[in-house]
Image 1 (tube, one colour):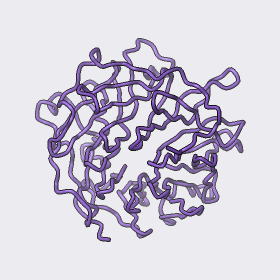
Image 2: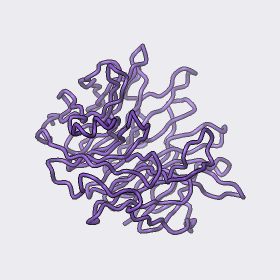
Image 3: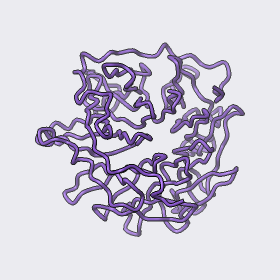
Length: 377
């Protein structure tokens, strides 16, 4: 199949600032085909439990199915949302009370319920769910118990929790899974300096996609195309695509540091670059062999004059809608954003002020009767 056989025409985008829940920072990490967006949000909190004054982060969803875009917090504890499927199942991490202390636990939110996923070790509870496919299979990472910081790529399905292993090293992480069950991420090798190779897990085997270069595979679509980045000898990142394990470096705007975050089933790719003036700019490759488009062209002059820059594009759905984070170089705020394609938005160009957003938190977390969440719908 030609890489450009399935693709959109050059899109026209409408920008919407998804704002925050009252704090200074928010980030949209994933979007499904219904236009539901998930990520991390902050409240207007005077104090913080974190060092250095960093605001507490809460897993959030921006739901486009309402007439007025509705922001909801998924948890009332320090938490993160990283992925959402087309059945509105959301995965990430949140704090779980274990023996009187709180541990970071892979978490799934759906239908107003919160369930925790099992860890690879009964002694090390830290785990993070990074992505979920439409069959309900979840991937991420979990501490193994071999040492405090050793963590392995992990898969959760209706059979249990599965250690996906490494390339012989201590660590690995699964970042994405497609609907065929192909998992991608990174893994370390056996040598001390042999770290973060882009890998895929297929049919129970781990495959090193770039044996001579370091990097990571960040996304895979249902066509089997994988994207991510590789690092050259000077440790600059380059946007990379793998097609049937053939490695292809994508065209780059800046040439020195850029990477890809996600690919949709139309083979559109999003990511980011560092420009000559040192700023991050969000990018779109409309086809894998095309030059990247700087998404900041879709900001109007008043938004740019106010200090806003679309810094990072994190995900793109099959409608071509893009989410990510916008930075304000004047106020040092960071807001989640969505770019909706061809003017079909379903979202207002601006969102209500934080006080007008509807706050609906999930019920108090309950531990599932079984530690492993079943993926059956």
